[in-house]
Image (tube, rainbow, N blue to C red; front, side, top):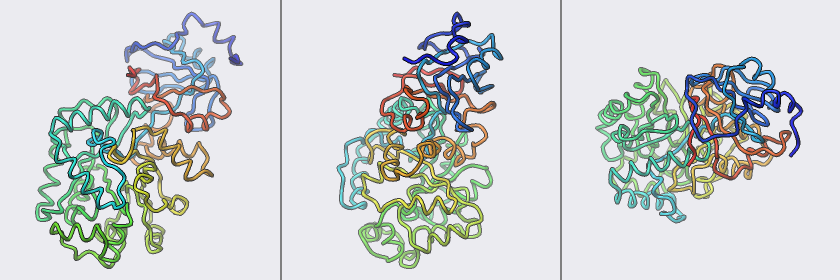
Length: 434
């Protein structure tokens, strides 16, 4: 194993250097986390570097020799030949459905998948959902996720769950069978959510949530200064429904009694913009956005500021959706993030796997930019760009580490990493990794 160029400095204070331990240091103890390389996402990666942590915040970052001198009383955690990077942020997930892994085979029709997941959901109890969410949290944590955007159809269950990672709870809201109850549905969810530190509202999609529901969500988000997300333009069938008033999704929703008068004139994106009136989609996290018409690109180009897009590469592959128009939306200024979606359309909750899948689809994208989609970009989507997604003084002490054999290719090694982690820190606390 090649020796560090600053190995002498490390040996001089070797009495204070500890091998990686399973125990959790006290939050009141200042710590130094040393690695072969630290990827700050705020500048070039730093070789033989360290991060100083006090409480739940990063206080310093730089060369190990410099950090150890500036923080001479700190407890040192030496991670050896590992890369230290910011904790990963999952911009879209449904932990409700962790228990549905492998239960729904690939189907030709997106509408048939909706029928299939509804049938599986009908078999689940409240206890099943609580167990499913807890299992999902544990799995996401093992794969390096320290912050997650989780959509739940059951906000009443949140108080039964102790999330082990930083969580934005979004109530997923549907009123397709009860559009007259839109405000009641939204207000009931808000009452359940407001006890949470981080929360938001998620009208499911324009085909299942009414104009009134979207507008009520937007009113509350403005009043409470909270976040909004929605599925949009996910499938060809959704495009056929709104633009052409035809197709399997159109027929299915008409059969169950949905008012279809909003179909036949606009694309899904055009429909959403029309619903939100004078306060369009700025500040939303739009999920998927796989189906575009030229008019949609014109709409985005006219927006004075851009929204975020949560793209889920492996769920996208599962459904064989139309190719994601990454280059077009990126050039228009949209903020691109990655999510895992649910295990009803994916195999695990690894953001490393999502990065690899993204790279397969867009091989020209630099690995550093792919990593940004689960760090800095995702933090921006949550309006947390000043505290999450980078390793800088004042930021939350959310760190993960992976083996690194070549610090000059650290971004390539991060994207290629395909194992659960054995070390992470959340809010300054070293985690036990199951």
